[in-house]
Image (cartoon, rainbow, N blue to C red; front, side):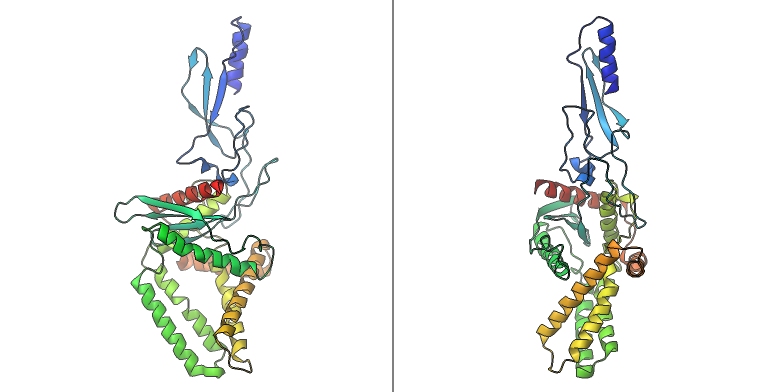
Length: 369
C-alpha cells in the first residue's frame, strides 16, 4: 500500500500528472477455501474500498501492486502490523478466545467425533465430515444442517443443555453416515460388535446374580465394562489417530491457525473428561435406584442415566470455566491421562489432510447457514 502511494507521489513530483489509475489490490491467498482465517468463521469480509482497512484475521496475504506502466507479479508479504494479535493459548493446545480491538467475535464452539477413516465435526447449526475413500484414496466430504432439539436455546439452562446437545450430536451420526458412504464409524468393526455383545451378556449376568442386593461394586464393574468396546475400537486401528486429528484441528482453529500440526492432540473439551464424573454419578444413581422400595423398571433406570449425564455435563462445564480449581484440575487430569495413554495418537500427514478438509467444510457450512 505504501509503495503504491510513494510511486504516485513520485510521479506527481516528476510532472507526469495524477495517477488516477494507481491501485493496490489486496487479495486473500486462499488455500482451498477462504476459511484459511477461520477465527471469524468466514463471516467477516475485507473492506476492499480501502486496502488499509483489513478486517480479517490472518498473517500472510498476497499483495498485488498494479501501477500504470509498471507490472509487478504478486509477492508474499507479512502484514503483522495490520492483522490482529494472535490469541493466547491454553496449556492443552486450545486457544483462548482472544481478539483485537473492534473484533469481539470469538471462534465458534465446535465438537467432533473421530471415525475409522475420517472426522465428523459439528458446529452451532451445521455438521461436516471428511473421510479417506479406501477405493480411490481421495478425500470425500459432505455437510448439512444439524438436527435442532433446542440445544442452542437451552444453552443457559443447567441440567437440560447437556442431554439436548448430546442428543443433537448423536442424531448427526446416522445422517452423516448416509450422506458420506465412504465413512466408517467406530463401531463398524466386528471386534467392537463382539465386545459390545459380550459386555451386554456379562452385565445381564451380574444384575441377575446381585438382584436387588447388588452393591456399589457391581454397579462399578458394570460401568467399567461399558468402556471395553471403546477400548477395543481404539486399539489396532486408525481411530486413535483420527481422534488426535479431531483435537488438533479444532484446537488449531481456536488458535486462529489452519495447520492442525501446530496444536496438541489432547483437548480439554474431549469427551474423555466426562468419563470420571459420569462413572461417579452413574454408580451412585443406579445404586440409589436399586434401593427404591418398589422394584425399579427400565423407565426409572433411564431417568437415572439421564440425570447422571446431566450432572456429569455440569461438572464438565464447571471444569472448563474454572480449570485451576481443584475440581477442574481433577477432571482434566483424568481426561488428559486417558487421551495421552490410549485414546489419541499423533496422526500422519495424510490423516491431518482429512482433518483440514473437514474443518474447511464445517466453516463453509456455518458461513452459508
